Length: 172
Image 1 (tube, rainbow, N blue to C red):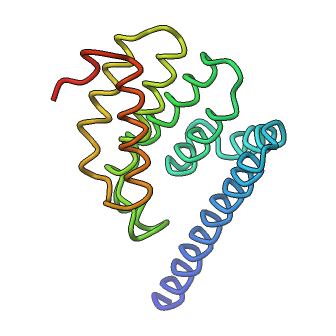
Image 2: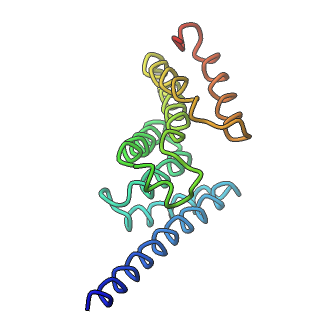
Image 3: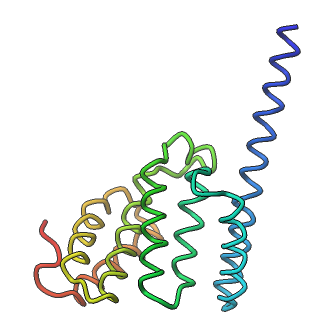
């Protein structure tokens, strides 16, 4: 009996992993539409996926979807709202959950980009002090980034935004 229960639990865990991968695949498909220039269709798909995931759903799914959904927004206030959702979901993530999706990922690596996006939102909304606050947080988190194309891109974007915001953007 115990062996049958163990087998059932293993099957359930395997199905859960497949479902999670399926959601990340669907999010990725919407991201590809977005990157191909079909912002409206990407946004429609993101909203449908958000309805499936829900406000209390898997934090990795919520973080990933909200992060990309923000980029489809025409209104900077809406973009900020989605970026705040992404940051909130990131606070709920664990390295174990992120590593289950991809073994090379760690939650701390999400924060430079998340704070950079929030800083950019606040710049668009003419809120330089809030932008500076998130620039400082992004700068403080860049040590989690690798010496690769992604890390280099985030660091370069951070430097550009710091220059745009001006003196006093970052206190190191």
